[in-house]
Length: 92
Image (cartoon, rainbow, N blue to C red):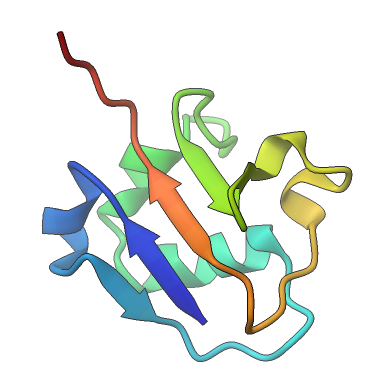
């Protein structure tokens, strides 16, 4: 499964995209846990002290923000899904 990172997350991961070899049927939450295991520095960038995804972090599944999907972070993924992770980005 390919996961794309943007802005300040790219230097932590060291790439624009990574391939995550996970089985079919995992959830968004399980994918994020696997990514955090691989890149522990991402934890403080993505999650608050209670372990909840920051509101300013966006995890898009096929162009739709995961927290707003019917099953939110419990949404089941397939290998064909496109995953994009965006931190808060400011500009002017």
